[in-house]
Length: 199
Image (cartoon, rainbow, N blue to C red):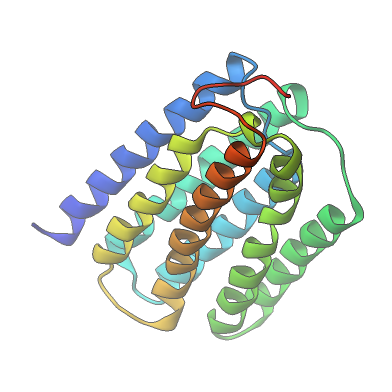
């Protein structure tokens, strides 16, 4: 199987995984945190251009797709999501802007990729904080596919460097850690699978 074929599968998996998330948003079951998705959309976009600059090839397709969909979810979250904004959320957004400036002014993308990998992981904080109290308001299956798609994205890379694989690898780890977090919190709160009520 070629890198391009693997990349196409990862993009299809991305769209399929997000379909569950969109379904639950419109059903009022999932309430995304707007700042998390704005940070993720912005940083993933920066990572995509960084990957392109370092020869990632088809392996960057999933990153671009994720960036676009994340920004769509951000706009949906403004109307249908969790709107409580904390100081840490604002710091994450500021960090995204700093990463964008660094990417624009540096001769190479390595510094920006390292920075956005750290900031993107911190971008989970608003969602983690919300999910600690309301773990039923996140679509668990989405994060399963979110990890899998980036495994395929890494496999589809044309060039393996820190710039091309660090960011998607961090997203695999972050998404699958978050799955464990959601499962544990739901059990601690006595929520059954599929239960969207708060106890």
